[in-house]
Amino acid sequence: MTGPGDSSADKLLLHDGVQRLPSSKAELFQLRDFVSAELRDELIALIDKDRRPSTIADDNGDAYFRTSETCDLCPQEAAVGELEAMLEALNGIDPAYGEPVQGQRYAVGQEFKAHTDYFTPGGPDFEKFCSVAGNRTWTFMIYLNAVEAGGATRFKAVGKTFKPEPGKLLCWNNKRLDGSVNPNTLHHGMKVRKGVKYVLTKWYREKPWGWAEE
Image (cartoon, rainbow, N blue to C red; front, side, top):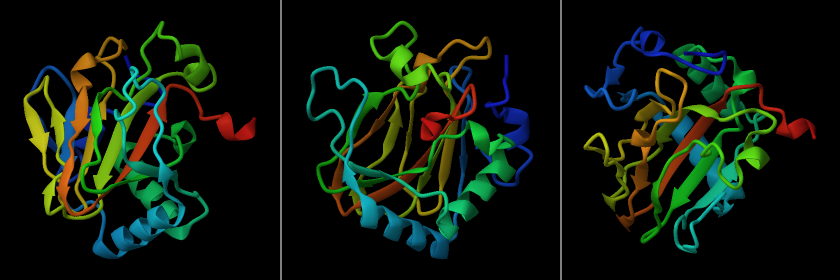
């Protein structure tokens, strides 16, 4: 079951270098060297300019569940527009279904504990976050720099941990093929042990993103 806010394995695998994790539990892909060094530097500068403490819809009572800094990147920035065009060429998703690109910065000791990107149907905040654009479909995440130690992304259910590599893109379908949410996409942005980690995340929705118009 797919919709206009979805990509597909067939679309992604048309691009040279895209690799799919050999698992039936989740649709999970990686693509090395997706973003050039010059563009990475521009995007890191934008994150540093506007970063603020990260928030989360539900921290389960744990004030340290997500301890990074974050920012929504302005789509009018030339570097952001270039990235958006690259993502559209890769995934085939109409940009109208995408949330603003989000930048994240993790200093030593900071992490994002195991979580899913979708909003749990029937959960306390489901209507609040999904009433306009529906639930999240696909996640596209890009590492912008090398990290001296730590900072990997661990997908426990599929038994795979990805280390940060400059320019590497990870993407996954937050849903199963029948359209239900996929708990096997649970992932942990592990603590940075040395250095700083910069990443970008782009989420897509079931319906056009409309929050900016309200």
